[in-house]
Amino acid sequence: MRSEAGEQVKLQRKRPGVPAALQCDKEADRERGENTMPATYNDLYLDARKSLKGAGVGQAQLEARELLCFVSGKDRGEFLRDLPLYASDGVEKRFRDLLARRLKGEPVAYLIGEWEFYGLTLDVCRDVLIPRPDTETLVERGILFVRDLPDGTRVLDLCAGSGCVGLAVADNCPNTQVYLADWSEEALRVCRQNIRRCGLTDQVNPVQADALEPPPRILREFDLILCNPPYIPTLEVGRLDPSVRDYEPRMALDGGEDGLKFYRAIAKKWKKALKPGGKLIFEVGYDQAPSVRAIMGEQGFQDLQTTMDPGMHWRVVEGSTEREAQPE
Image (cartoon, rainbow, N blue to C red; front, side, top):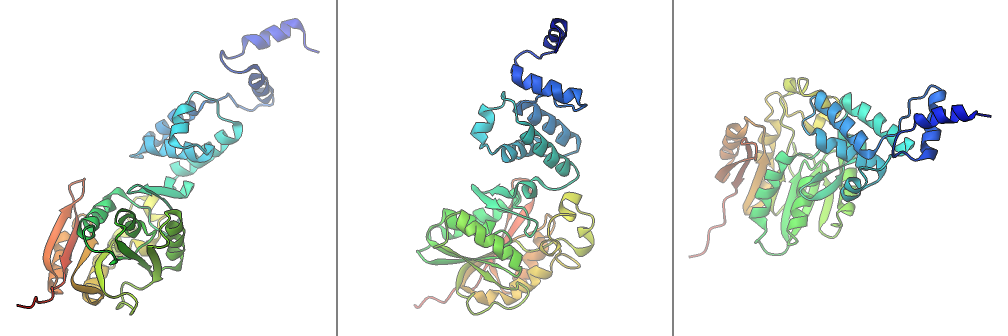
């Protein structure tokens, strides 16, 4: 039995504002040698943000929030509302475990299994690239081209990965019928999941196709082909940031010796998949726009254009097939 003096000592060690029952549990843990000082959601968030910033993570605030929302099962509104509340021991442990993995380089999108892109929340895993803001420029150019075309406009997202590009176009342009094409069975599985998650099963279809080979018969007569192909030169893949090099699929990164292998093959072999006057729009690496524009010109594409992304890099190159001659 504890003495009154012992109880007074214990009471003096209590933290103001911490429930007595919780403090008693924590005190018992401390007597067993465990450091379990209660932490609020705000404590965890601030600690994570500081650690991520110290590790050179550019979006430390965003990533700390996304990790904490994921482990707690809260949406962003609930997260902000509950910042002053104490996190359970289970939430704190899981959060710190995931944070440790992130600090070792594992991307937060793979840790939580989803990422946002152009207003959509999409499933992602290590079988597909993580959607990036740079690619929204490709989506915007596609939307501008097809949004005023008639119902039934056919759009192909070639080298689809997670399907983010084609799904974003479909979500914003209900007049389109969109196909997501990839060679990887694993990527197509993710595409199917995202088609269902976005509620676009009546508008979007996944199909297996090799971008380096001529298009199969079912992939013809498109008004628009959008493509974000692998474009990192082979020798540069090994020099990428470890969070990319060690976790994202190499087959979605490696664009051959000079990074242009897919552009050459697609501009030559997939031109036949477009209708007369149809458009091919590529995402390109930060220094590849002149080369890709030249490749498209050599294959007879007309009205060539380049577009900058918000970071002021030439990010998109596009061109059209020859239009049918109009009767006089």
